[in-house]
Length: 316
Image 1 (cartoon, rainbow, N blue to C red):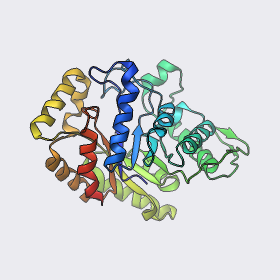
Image 2 (image 1 turned 90 degrees about the horizontal axis):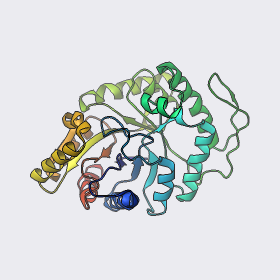
Image 3 (image 1 turned 45 degrees about the vertical axis):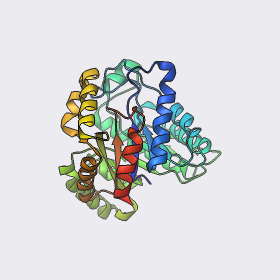
Image 4 (image 1 turned 30 degrees about the vertical axis):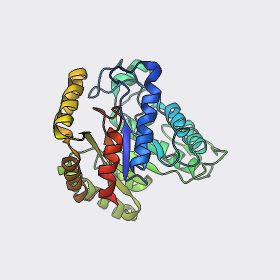
């Protein structure tokens, strides 16, 4: 289960040409593994997100990338944060995640969500639909995927998807955890209570207590043991050995990526002591851990290692 996850959220690095992108990504994954992160995530998008750059910034398909990272790591779990359910048939997704588990020696995890980036859907021909459409699809998909990952032969004649005795051979090497991303209290957290092993909240720290209370209520109503669910919260950080270096690296990031200005108020910026204090406050709100996005400076050698060495002791 994820308690300290590192998300590689962008592939736009200063002075790094396309032919060196993968090496830069691998270096981050290796630093994460060696410094105490238990999971490495990449985003499941085809265009860069508006708060991280421009649509035509580099974006690598996530499951191809995760399978490649499996060959350069040995202990970290590997997952999307999170798969857009609208992009893939659920039976194909179950097979894809199973393949990732096999090529990684049993380290796959499935992060999944309903999908939200309308421009990407419209541009590439994926059906977007309404909010209700997307959540109905997600619920049916979870029934199919969970069954296939568990070695069952699910049959579903649903409104959105149909399968008949769907086989998944070879089976996963491990029990693949399912993480649902998002913080919707009525739909998303109800699906967490019903289908997921993990929840990755997208919310400010001040809202964590309310989200956890909503999840508790769903678990109680559905008869789910709340202790079975690991809850992390997505965070954004720019840390360096000194406060001044961290501030300078964040300002340089905003200079080259103006869209990132919207993250300023959410960004944890500082030296290891400052960052550790902020994360300790978040942990005290009741979550089990964090997913960490270091888009501002994660590509700088040593920064991911410093993050892991700073944050892992908080969860020991």
